[in-house]
Length: 165
Image 1 (cartoon, rainbow, N blue to C red):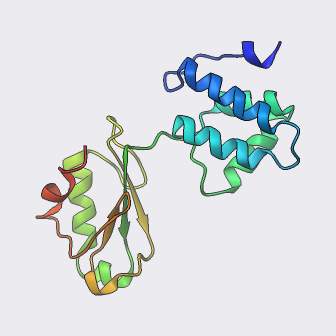
Image 2 (tube, helix red, strand yellow):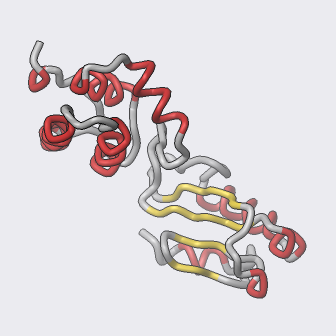
């Protein structure tokens, strides 16, 4: 079976994406250490790495699924679950904890139906907690994509996040 004809159906991967993925694999298949660049570029195409895509990459690079999965699961930059259009990174460091970050997290979880460490059903937001964002003077602090927001509170969270569609 040729690489071009192996097109498993997946709700998040369009035919155009499959074509781009095949080009990525073809461009890298003879390069030593190609797995990480291929995984990275394919994740950029789809937004995450579903198992069907890992199988496709393994087939294209002539590697077993276990090797491709092992590499992808080792590095934190790869995700096996869909991400939201916007990523919220919320600091759980000491200063933020003392200033009420847990209330902010609870409000986000309740109002936007996004669990900590997960993504809401509409894939609008992904919510991640981090140890420190290096802005303790503005605690509690969170990032939404590349935007830093300081002195956040549960009462202000709706006004802040409603601007992100």
